[in-house]
Image (tube, rainbow, N blue to C red; front, side, top):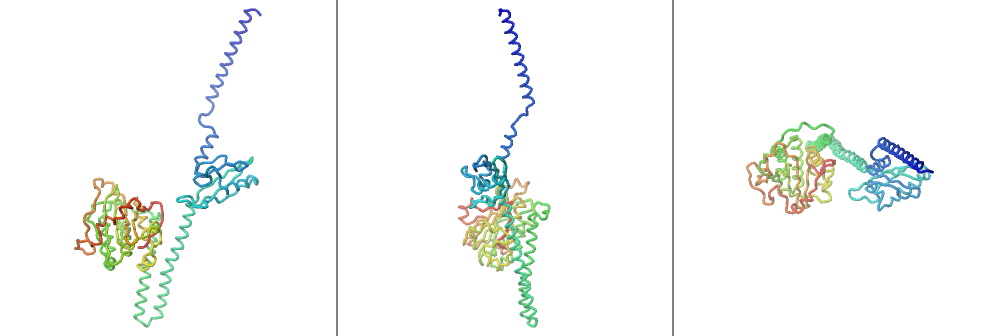
Length: 428
């Protein structure tokens, strides 16, 4: 081949190469423009599995773990990269039968604040692969247990006074000719009917506070007025028990809320303090502003509450001292009402207590937004409220806002009642 022919052939090859390269480049450019941007479908599915609120496990035909998410570890389905034995056996059965099945994967030993009821479903994926999807049903189980307890407690609490009234009515009929006996039984009937009426009233109030009815429009409430009204409701019972109720001077603090509900809550705390204190012991009330919350503390030197009971005294119908509560006519709903009143006002109720030392219940409600110029209040010298003109404080009672010295050491361990829980009272 001559030199000109070789040159022409090389030039033609170069032109063809350039043309092919140009076409390939155009094709790639067009393909990249047409191809969807972002993660692939497989990547999105993996993200979904890993972010799911349900625990997800994928197992192969040998029961080995292929894929799982963090929620599966939280529910206890995977520990140290080892699958729960119950889930593994169920997956093997489903892989053989190709029939989905449900399984209880609840922890055998419930950890603190861990899930109590975990239910899972095992489904075949084909080719020997299976998926286990589990969800935490602890809240539903707790709610159902609470509902059963509530129904049982209400039935018992209602049957007790109703049965007593029926028996007493029969006794009145049998003693119709004895005026003294009729009067004695009549007084007991009145006492039981009063207790029954109080129980029904508090059940209705608790139902309203838990959302069955809309709360009234909130208004600006003077906290000093609330304290005065609560004292007025409790003064007679305190005088009958020989208990002095002391209080600090007026604070001028205000909150946004419902005055009637706040008075009811504080009255319940005072009633408890009086009912669970020995005759002659002091009870105090203090008011102050702390971190944007108005705190009203009720302190007593009563029998106190054991640590094991402190988390439960806000449950409906729960009583730490059932015999004393029965004797004082308590319904077991008082502290439940206090808790829900505080929650509906955006606050909470706190408890410090020590058996044989006493208790301090603190009602915390957000201060009124316009009261920003009010500085933190430090309780002044207490004023005795059991007698209008009294100004002294019993020797056994320190400043009412300051709990006993052990309170300072355990202040960070004060039991706070969360807003989203339901419960009941020790008494009131």
